[in-house]
Length: 498
Image 1 (cartoon, rainbow, N blue to C red):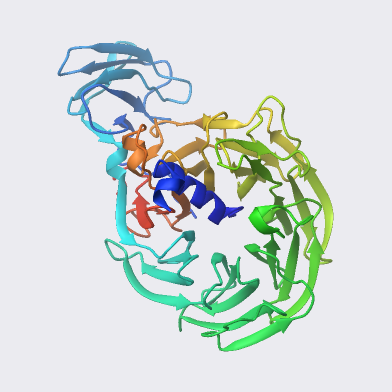
Image 2 (cartoon, rainbow, N blue to C red; image 1 turned 45 degrees about the vertical axis):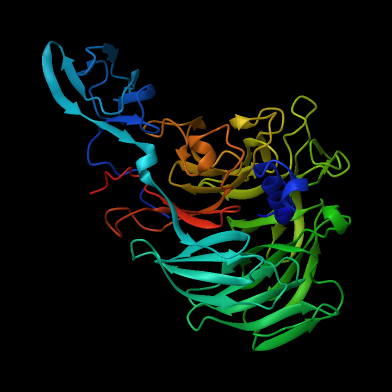
């Protein structure tokens, strides 16, 4: 899920520092109360929504909301699903009275303060290695893959803040970029620059086997065993998926300066004996994110972008249109392809990358240049929201990067690399900022100061499995920043879980 990651980090870092020449599973929202007042961050002229979750008031009831500090009152009617959400502009220290009446009878009369989305975010809770690329959560541990420091940091999420309990090293120059778990003990790591993959043991914290292309062995320590594979099994490995007892590693297949060297492909390793099986040729270029759904494998072919020499302008490369290949893990063959036509109307909407799917087969991908998402029906093999009509998070004309997506229940969380935010989408309706998430979570410098030349680069995120407040306490989402190289967290219950 990291198309051109190092390239984009370099460009973004240059933008952040003004000039390159000068610098060189489960739970959902679990509130204790159904009626909330919510603002993005503290202030005196902030947008405040005072609302109720579905079922909070009788449908058709009258809801009077009064700012007790200013006397301003908004009157609304309970929606069919029992929700409501009048909007105020005010001080986040204000209190609000919510009076609900039905047929003249008082149903509810309560006073509430303002809950801040910013209070749900903890930044800089641990320092990461150089160029962190991926975060995965397995059980109560988080694993952060660090590209330039060639290791995987392990954090105990039961500690507050999470405590680093160890590292797993891979060979120097590997540039690990993503990992996928075979089970609770072992995982496979795609090494983007090392032209290799590693089998690591997360309990003993060792690299057990290095699978490497002939001619690219270099230094193989500290891996205990090396398996050299003839031919071209790896060319810029980028993603990992496991299905039918086999490991599928996507390969970008790029030339110098990140230009496609033809189409991408997938390397296949049998997990039982760790023998290389075959490669599967993709139908498009820039093969990156790869996931399993419904017994099939879905491979994102991101395509390509070009730019001016100074990176001041970017262009979707029409010679390499994006697509999604469907692979049968029984036959290891591409059985179908979902084409993704580029759009003249939205010339920067391209480079689909990180992909996540709902339980009923609707998939969403982030985009490499703008703050938007694409949507697909994996069952019918159709584009639902393509480049002509993406789901817009921030903009389709200015540079941003929906670097990662993760879905739990009916909520999608996506990181916004350039604006340091984590946005929320309701996958039932594709509504952006569904109540009580009235704005993206502010998770870095630029979220609080949009005009800042510096930013953290909010990048990859992972959702902790289990139900917040029941299976664990504390935050349920953890994220990494690509520029400031820090671990952060979000409590999506807004601190209201029991």
